[in-house]
Image (cartoon, rainbow, N blue to C red; front, side, top):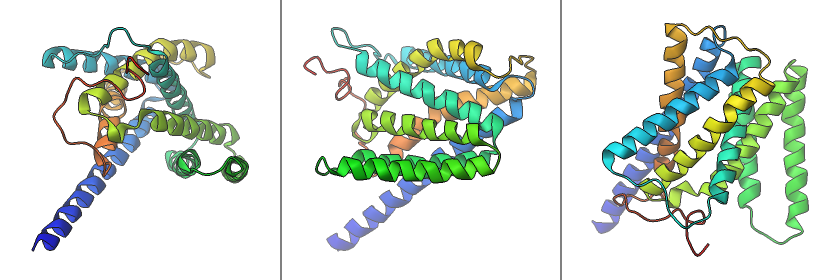
Length: 262
């Protein structure tokens, strides 16, 4: 009976993880689908800047209401700033990519490259394995980049590759599956703070269009991006991990990021 109960519990956990992963995927698709919907009224990078600012504000209001501390004193924030810069690069590249290429193609390129980069980053072995990793990564990037090129979307394909690399680096650094809920909330808040500072500058400097005539439907689409991409996606992804912790939120510091002795 104990063995059967263990198997049943394991199946329930797997089903829960799969359901949460599907929800995270739907959030991702809704976020970037709404970018394309609002693009005729608001340029993609300006959408990203508004969505990330709203996300930061809503998360800060939530933590104030719940009485959760977001800042740790006497610690170095450089790793958190680095994570925020990676997040900014990822969002900026994906917003530009979906503005230039069909969403399904961006999703395929991003997903395949993300899987490849995560394997490369987590593949442990001897130093000589780095050569093989670089060859595999270059080969995969060349194949998908060529596919995008022949589809007439060379720039968008390259943006999706860079976004996948930034996401993989940030995901490995974050290690969200081992985080307490409050730790993950802090980490996300730092990401959003850095992106809220950098994305408006990127929009002004690199946006191919300065179109900014938001209507009600465009503002609604940006709010969908705020909820789905800025807030829901990372927490669903963390909860979908089979190793995610289920303890109550604590006041622990972010592993490798906010430890005073790190």
